[in-house]
Length: 179
Ligand SMILES: [Ca+2]
Image 1 (spheres, rainbow, N blue to C red):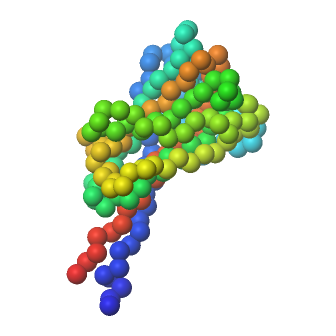
Image 2 (cartoon, helix red, strand yellow; image 1 turned 90 degrees about the horizontal axis):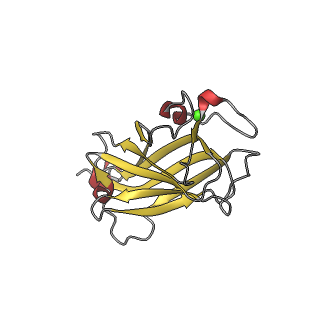
Image 3 (tube, protein in one colour; image 1 turned 135 degrees about the horizontal axis):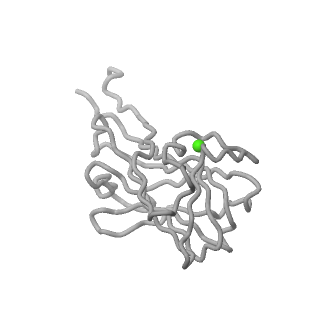
């Protein structure tokens, strides 16, 4: 049997190409491109290299980021997504900040993870959240809208801000078997 007949696992890192937040809910002069590179570790504090998310007067924040799937990735061959983040902020018990993915076919959001591993502002924390979580038959198109995967970040009962240094969506797929 020729090697070319074996399916090949592939992966690709998607970076945030659109960030939707309410007006005044990001730090001054900060931009989503700061999320493209993981460059804050331990006690780093470079304002130009992370994004600070600010809750409103009621203590809540909700925003979306869009990840565009490149044309060369066949949607039907996608096996898994993984959201990688590097963040800094309050404890989950004091102020839960939650990442979710939008299931566009059912118009609902699926919880991916939260700030449970927070070091309470002393250090940056890396986390990875995989999906699908418990689907028997995974259909990646259930998570696509106009070729984009939409991830939301929600802050609740937040008396404090929340910093993100890096956020990226890794897509894994298997190349079709050739004859
Ligand atoms: Ca960064």
